[in-house]
Amino acid sequence: MGTTKTEAFTEADLTLATYAKALAHPARVAILRILLERNSCICGDIVEELPLSQSTVSQHLKELKEAGLIKGDIDGKKVCYCIDAEAWKHAQLLMQQIFASYTLCGTSCC
Image (cartoon, rainbow, N blue to C red):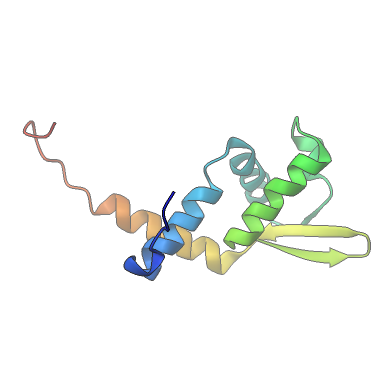
C-alpha cells in the first residue's frame, strides 16, 4: 500500500480522522460512555463494566488516550482515566461541522 500523503489534508481533517478512528470500535464507545456517565476520573473500575479482559481494555484505553479523547494519570499502581474536556469539545465541533455541511439534495442524488 502506498503512503497516505497526510500533508495533502487539512489539520482539521487529520484530527477528525483520528477521533473517528478512536470511535470506530464499540468497546471504545462503551468506555467513553462509562467515563461520561461517571463524569469523574475512574481508576480500574472500567474492566468490571465490560465483557473484556484487562489487557483488551488497556489496549482500547491506550487508543483513546493516543487520540487525545481521554487523559490518564498515574495514581500509585493504578492509572485513572477521564475525558479530556478540551479535546472532547474539539471533537464535538469537528463532528458538528462535517455533519452540518450536508444539505439534502432532493431526489436527484444516487
